[in-house]
Image (cartoon, rainbow, N blue to C red; front, side, top):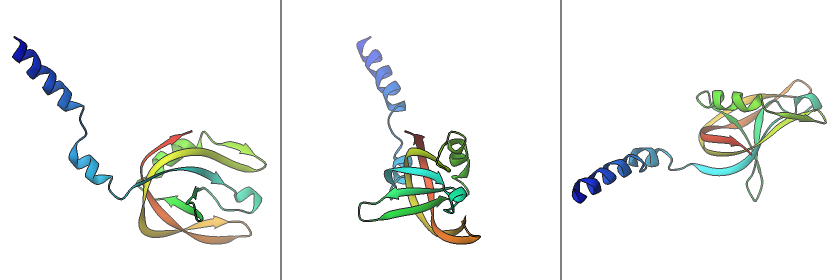
Length: 122
């Protein structure tokens, strides 16, 4: 009876272990706090992420696959002094692509594109 109970507990426990394939997919991803912001009303740029990289400031936009995750957070943004923003923690990696983002004075800026594995509001 004890062997059967031990076997059942092992089987149940294995279901909660991380899948090796899922871990492999996250290789190359960084986890950082960031600010999802829209500064367009004050002549900044439309929705993008600002990330403190320690030695600089990164500005990123989500790829098409990540956009639904971002859209859900945009609805939770607070507006202060004309800037809408949401503080987040995200796991992301650069895709190697760039996107043009609308900025003030009818200009566009190229920003690096990111793939977002996970994101949550802080």
